[in-house]
Each structure stands twice: as C-alpha cells, then as structure tokens.
Image 1 (cartoon, rainbow, N blue to C red):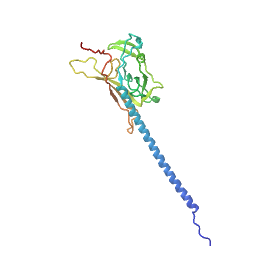
Image 2 (tube, helix red, strand yellow):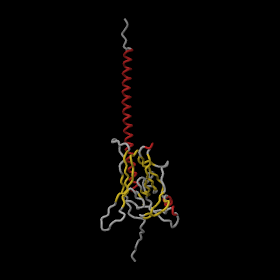
Image 3 (spheres, rainbow, N blue to C red):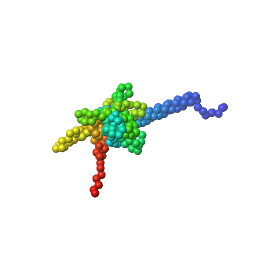
Amino acid sequence: MRPRQAGVTLIEVLIAVTLLSLLSLAMLFAMRIGFSAYAKTNDKLMANRKVAGAQRILEDELEGLIPAMPPCAGNGDGVGAPTFVLFQGEPRMMRLVSAYSLQQAWRGQPQLLELFVIPGDQGRGVRLVVNETPYSSRIGGRICTGIGADAAGPAVQFATASAGPQSFVLADQLAFCRFSYLLPPKNPDPNQPSRAVWSPSGTGRGWPQAIRIEMAPLEPDPSRLQPITVTAPIYIHRSPQITYVDKMPY
C-alpha cells in the first residue's frame, strides 16, 4: 500500500491564481483612483497658487510706482526737450515705472511696465499681460511720440503697446478686465470738502491716488480660487514737478 502524499490539486492552484489576480486588480484600481485624486488636487492647488501669486504681483507692481518724468523723444530728447508725466492710464491699457519686477522682485532695476488686455485663446474671453523693460530716461522718453494740448491742458501722445514672446500672462480666461484710477477733483472748491473720484482714464492727470483692476472669470468655479478685483494705493510723498530747495538761515 502506497503512503499518502500531501499536495494541491490543479483546481486549487487555479482558484489561488484567480483570487490573487482579483486582489491585484483591486489594488491597481485603488492606486489609480488615489493617483487621479492626487493629480486633481495638485492641479487645483497650482491653479490657486497661480491666481494668488498673480494678484500679489499686481499689487506689488502698482504700489511700487515711481514718479518718473523723462524728456519726450517726440519733441526731441536732448537738452531742453519738454518732460512729461510717465503714466498712461486707460480702461484697458496702463504704463508706469515700478520698482518691482517679475524676475528680481524688489531687488532689481526699475522697470517700465506695460499692462494691457488682449483677446484670449481662440477668441474666448480676455487675458491680462504685462511687458517689462529695464527703465532709463531714454527708454521712457521713446514711448512719448509728442506733446500736444487739449481743453484740459497738455496732452501726451503715447506709442502703441503690443504683446510679444516676452509678454507674461498675469491672468487668463477672464470674462472682462478693466482699469480705473482714483483721481483728485479737477477744480476743487476751497470752501467745500473735496473728494477723489474713480475714473476710467488717468492719462494726463498726473499720478493717481490708487489703481483698481477689476476682473471676473470666464467660467466661474466655486472649487477654485477666482480672480478678484485688485485695488492698490499709490504712495507718492514727493512730486518731481515741485522743486525742493533747502533754505538755510544766515
């Protein structure tokens, strides 16, 4: 009589392999769902950081405004050429000199900034872009094509700005984007309290007391951080239009 030998049958092997395959498939699906959720969360976090970073950059660029008055190249940028207030404020276009730059933050050379609104990708909505150019009085003077006059006084004619390969997109997929400027009253009454007013145009009015950039998303998504209105106060404590002279008593 042969002794009984321990072992497994072919059916038991097939059942074990099947169970192991099902367990591996379940683990694979669980890992795939986990990685997909991680990727979606990471995308939302990156999008939120981009929106928050763009808003912080806008505030820093506006609050870093430098009151520059270069000679106008359109009227001759040599000795004796008239100077102009280098600030162009329009509803969809703005030029200014700022101490803040995208690459070097507050540590670099002053930049000539051109912020303007252009159509979005495939004509859907609009986007806000900025051009940065290291500032010098000669470069600043080139954007002035001439100084004329109108009913309000001297009128500076600025060169046209355009987007290029070096343009940086600050906000995209916007339903609208518009600029407004807090300006002092034109003819304040000394007998009445004067209040600054918001205007869609600030060109030729000197430097504003504050700048507002209104934005709204093209497709609102409650689960993501949305572009909002940015309002930046402008602090200018010394105007280059006024000559300061130290008066020493003798």
